[in-house]
Figure (cartoon, rainbow, N blue to C red):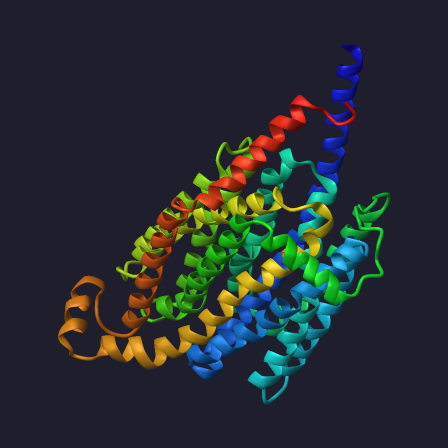
Length: 452
């Protein structure tokens, strides 16, 4: 009995130490996220003012995401092959090179959208090294019981660019320009790298022994791990669709609000809405392990979609802030539930390349959304809602007419589609089987402990 108590006490101490190290790592990501948010917010407004085009903003967003998305599987293979903390350090430092290119362009007498896009693309390129390594490090450090809590902490750090950055950027843009925001972002990289180095000291990464396999072979192993369970494949498809719809609100929310409100109002609403994601992340990080992550996933999708759609029916800033806040409250539930369901059903030694591939697939939804949102907004929905057709008049009685209401209609449709996806998730037996199989394995492990 005493030996059992000592063993349990050691396990608790070990888990606490691991969580402390992980918390430091999250602090580093928090700082980096704030810096990235300053650049993202500042450049988006800068390009919108420079060009006056939603399509131009979409092109910038594509350049910011596409390189990282395409190279994320390579980053995943590297995360499984080499020290994951080292990959994070390299990714942080070299992504700063792209920001320097952006800085040079915006400080020039004749700023170029093309040069800014190249710079942000270079930065995105090296981010691909960091993100799969960071996700896989969760499994390196923590036990399964802490996965959901860790997921909530990661969401808090990631959401800082949506919650904290707009407030800081909005204030700084009143007294300075976008170049200052980019400089601050570059400086945050060095702080983040220092924290990663502190956490790295004395840690042993759970890497595979065989590092002689080719990238092609390792990529095939990652694909095989994902394809091995139908439920994982379905979750990936679902998350790709969800990301596609979320891409619309990312691009269209700024021009929607600016069509009837000021930049100051945009900054305030951006912060209020992002606060919802922070609240949702905190709630989940404080929760005990969920009894059903499948239920968390489909309820999150349903509620998120409903509030998403409601954003498009009003021009009242208070209501938009409330609907946006509630939409973001449920977003962490979607992300964390999907992450835990996948993580618990994949072997640790393939998680780096698996998450790299998953990131590639799901985030392509953003690219398709960015490609379509600007074109649909500028050339289809805005002209449609500005016309006098019978359908446009009827829709206008519900959501209003004039500038920006075509964008509102597009947001309304996307939200309804997301809610429908949420309803569909509850119907997939293979997704529910992922949770049931994992529970059976946990019962077997508790009944037959390792070593008996």
